[in-house]
Length: 244
Image 1 (cartoon, rainbow, N blue to C red):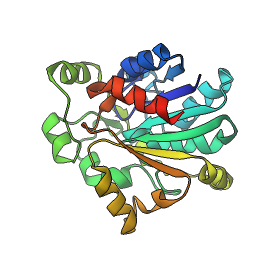
Image 2: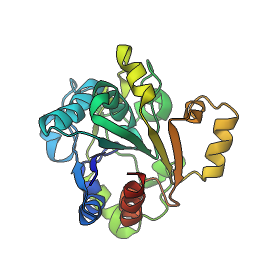
Image 3: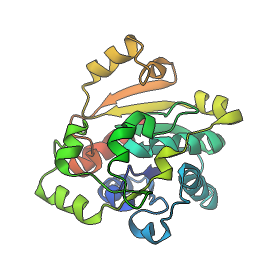
Image 4: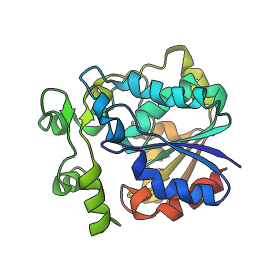
């Protein structure tokens, strides 16, 4: 049996992992989908004070309070920064970090520097809320909608909540924990980018991909759009189980 902690990307909550978690449990594993502060069922906790450190503490708090060990820590998309920070701080309890349509934010960089400040800032409301863009805007930004039918889009539209801006504008600082994070086994699950393209970007030293060349990394592919937990949940669960 393997223990999984499942962290959603921007605008989502634990609900987005429901089908993946059910499939993992059906295979005999332990699955903990997590809603981060200010989102979904924890939207009442949203405020300008919620930042990346808040979300890192959400993850480490779950791992420590449930006394979880040998955890496979899974982060989707914009959840990658919080997962990186949490993995560094709780490295002794983490067996592997899995980035689904995501990757580690470099130490000292803010997630917004990867997503594009202009794209985000012109959509911010009330000075600190970043609502989910329209489908057209998401697609224009490079987020593949493959596999999202009417049911999946309706679910996301109905349940998505605005992202507290501080969670993507605060730089990730690993400090003394950087070495612990570097040593952890890691896996990239690429869905909307063909794996051959990812390998080419790694080989050419692309700044967002070059770090994936280390021996601690494994690369996997699941052909679908940017939200595989909704478009191919059973297949994603099977892939995660194989990593164990």
